[in-house]
Image 1 (cartoon, rainbow, N blue to C red):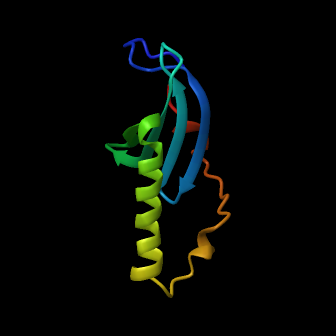
Image 2: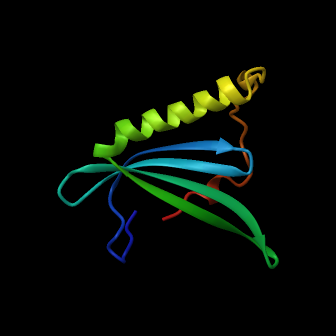
Length: 109
């Protein structure tokens, strides 16, 4: 996975999460000095002209921010589940391993 512009690094671990029309990628990468960071990428398939393109948004998360990020994410999710939608059954979304015919097209580089 080489990006010839020099701003992409070796991928150590990757996890894909399908979520309806979106797919999220959690990729652990290494810097030149063997430090590690996480990229979180949202990919959405869009129709453009007569073909499909993938719109991507990426977040870079560095090790010193892991704890703060997880804590804030958990707090936000808990707020939605507990305060905003206390009667909603979120378990209906668990274990959704549906496969898409476009799975192979989603990973890039």
